[in-house]
Image 1 (tube, rainbow, N blue to C red):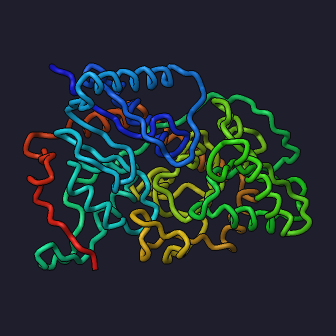
Image 2 (cartoon, rainbow, N blue to C red):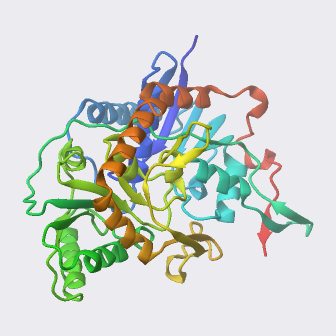
Image 3 (cartoon, rainbow, N blue to C red):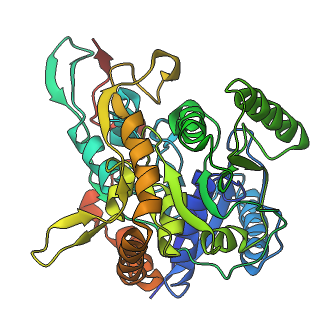
Amino acid sequence: MFKKKVLIKGPVLSRSGYGEQARCILKALRSREDLFDIHLVNIPWGRTGHQSEVTEEANYIRETLLKTAMYIQQNNNQGVFDISVQVTVPNEFQAIAPINIGYTAGIETTKVAPEWIVKANETVNKVITVSDHGKKVFEQTKYDVHDQHGNEHKGWGIQVPVESINYPVRVSEPNEINIDLKTSKNFITISQWGPRKNLGNTIKWFVEKFRDDPDVGLIVKTNTASDTVMDREFTQNRMQTLLNSWGERKCSVYLIHGELPAGGLAWLYEHPTMKALINVGHGEGFGLPLFEAACHGLPLITITWSGQMDFICKPNKKGKLVPMVIPVAYDIRQVQKEVVWKNIIVEDAEWAYAKEPSFKRALQESLDKEKHFRDKAKSLQKYILDKFSHDKIHKQFVDSVLGFDSSLIQPTDAEDNDTPVLEFE
């Protein structure tokens, strides 16, 4: 059997969610190198930094990037591949091989941009998302449009298959980090400091709740845009200004900025003083920090909506999926005007808004009912370690990449594509 020449195009070097995603499918395809001849093209991802650790995977990535560059150069800058897997936002998908797969994460709202649907329909044979939430939103988003001839198309949407494949288990050996935890009841939140993550309210509500308790601490693992020294100073000043605006407090807030050594987060998740990981963001494509913490058996304080629903729920005796977290109530409302982003977040999309009283109540319950929620977290951990095993998830990716027959292959020449040119009302 001939190996399929597969090109993975994505931010394989980036320290970002999409970087993790690109390396995730790379690991999956590497599990069957008897089937795939793997090539890589790296793309930049905002201002995120590159991974700096020297590992077997990092060496493999750099060697494969060089191999791919030489292959393309030797073929007059036109490498020929059987399959492309493109890890990016859908408006950047391209038809670059006989079979093209778009692998995307960023569906945190209730609606995808019309440009995503156009590009997916025109350029790829399949879309893979990281959660059932993303799959559902992609499939349910519809627009009323007119084609270039003035003909109306009501309820126009995605025309290619959409599949959901989650991340595999993420567990590391704990590796102690240099942090002076002076508090005995600690929580952790992990996110980039942007509007979607709701980090300002997370810190504000936490401080208001535990203002007079010197035994409580919140570890904030964050950055603003990158892991540079300049970003660290900016983020530190931003944090200090925020905390100063709320006056005196006895609780502690710890800031961790930049890359941690392997196992550093695992050490925090399993620290004997750690009570829960907090995420009350507006929505997640999947929610990797939540997933990692759950893999280590840490209780979660979060909303029960969006991408995390794939792994925060466990079947009960009747087979019904039940959230195994400390839940925070929420409303679904239109996204804020300031987050509308051309070709990414559309104006009439909606996402979740955590309710402040419910969040503060969840914080208190995590302490008052610690054993109850710790037992729930351990039960969820056991379920996750089985359902999301590397073997199972890797097989899903391999089957998905190989799961095509010739009738599904779209022409790569735009002139041969029947997708109409559409105008949006």
